[in-house]
Every structure is written in structure tokens, then in C-alpha cells.
Image 1 (cartoon, protein in one colour):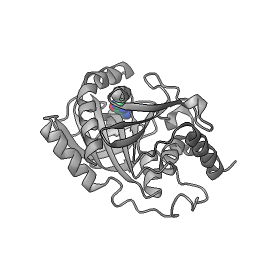
Image 2 (cartoon, rainbow, N blue to C red; image 1 turned 90 degrees about the horizontal axis):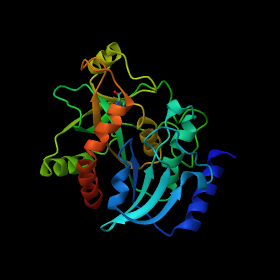
Image 3 (tube, protein in one colour; image 1 turned 60 degrees about the vertical axis):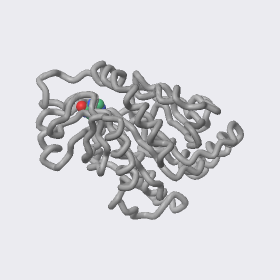
Image 4 (tube, rainbow, N blue to C red; image 1 turned 180 degrees about the vertical axis):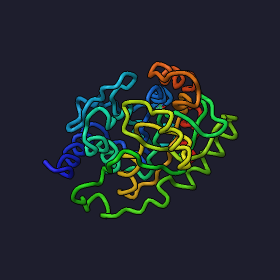
Length: 272
Ligand code: HPA
């Protein structure tokens, strides 16, 4: 089956399970899965029951596609994303984002955990992503263009919607949640970076680094969907602090700020 046939099969299956027509899709990053507890959940579909969905393998990620509401905002939430470092093809990594697009979402909100190296950053801060630098060495749109999904050469001038960033900034300010705005550098992982790599990313203008987001944001832009993205700075990046990096630290920080994160996201989805 080609991608369009797979997407059609997946979307048709989902439509037999729920009548929900979400306008907003959300991808939840590591340790941020509890957001769904703030939703009025209408339908939960485990990845292993959805045709062509592949269960994630990373600790701290469970795999569910969840439909529901916060206030009047109709949402579809991906709890547990796929990462390129797991060995999936880029096509597999972006499949859930494309599925949400074909279910009719107009806005994709992407969240992630990231290492921070912007001036004044601390673990537990947030960063609104203004733009990204793709250091993954590949692109999910490589190969023959699938014209049903978008053009051959998609524009990426405003990959992260400025109006959505403004709304997000206003909410974070009102909630007194300390946050930054900047460029996210997407890498493959699974190693954390070397201190020299972080120096290079900083010289390039980046402020955060992570192993996700870039593929889904590219796929969403291809499809003409507006994107907002926010990083939870779970740790200072390699060489910025003296500490060695561990996945435990990343998930622990995400846990600590989860409440703040949920406060932001629950308000954001009703204002956009
Ligand atoms: N580097 C890359 N990805 C990450 C990091 C990091 O320091 N922290 C959380 N995800």
C-alpha cells in the first residue's frame, strides 16, 4: 500500500470509532502525557488497535490517539509520538500527524522536551518555537511528492504561525510562567549532543535542541496546517552545565513542570 492508501484505511477506521471532528491536533512530548486528564475524553484509541499505527518504544511514552474536548475546543491528541532514532522511516514518524490532518485539523500544536542553551535558560523553563533548523540530515518529504498532501516545494517562511505565538506569549505572561522564544534545532539522537555541537548550534542562532518535532512540523506545513510548538526545557544542554545528561533528569523535569504546562495548554486550546 502507498501512503495515501494507508492514510485512507487509517482515517476510515478512526471514523468508525468516533464522530468527533477535531479542529486542533496536539502532539504530546515525553512526560507531558497527563494533559489528557484535563480533557473531557470522548474516545481513546490505543496505537496497536489503529491500522498502520506503530506503538512507540521509548520509556515515558504511551501510545494513544485521544479524542475529546476542553471547553468548546474539539481536540485530537497524540499521546506518545514516534521518533526517527527508534529506527522508523520518516514516513512512519509523520504518519500520525498526517492522519490528524486528514481527520480535518486546522491547527497542530506540537510539544516536546528539549535541552536548552539560550542565555538565561534554566531547566523547567518553556520555549515557544519561532523557527527550526533541521539537523536531521533528511526530510520527511523526500521521495516522489504526494500531491494529495501538498506541493513539491513547500514554503517554510512561517513554519510556526506568528499569530499563534502571540496568543501563546500572552497566556504565558498572564500565567507568570517563565518562558523564552527561539529557534529549535532538530537532531536525530539518540545520543545527547557533544558540548562542541551545542556551541555550534548556539553560534547558528539556536536556543534549544531536541530529537523530535521537525518532521511533524514539516509534514504539517506541507499540508497547509498552521503550527504552534512549545518546548519544555528539561535540562541545560551538554556543556552548558557541568552535569552529565540522563533520560531520568529529562522525565523528572517534565513531571515537575507538567502542571504549569497543562495550565498553559488548556488555556491555549480555547483561545486559538
Ligand atoms: N538534547 C536533545 N534532546 C533532548 C535533550 C537534549 O539535551 N533534552 C531533552 N531532549
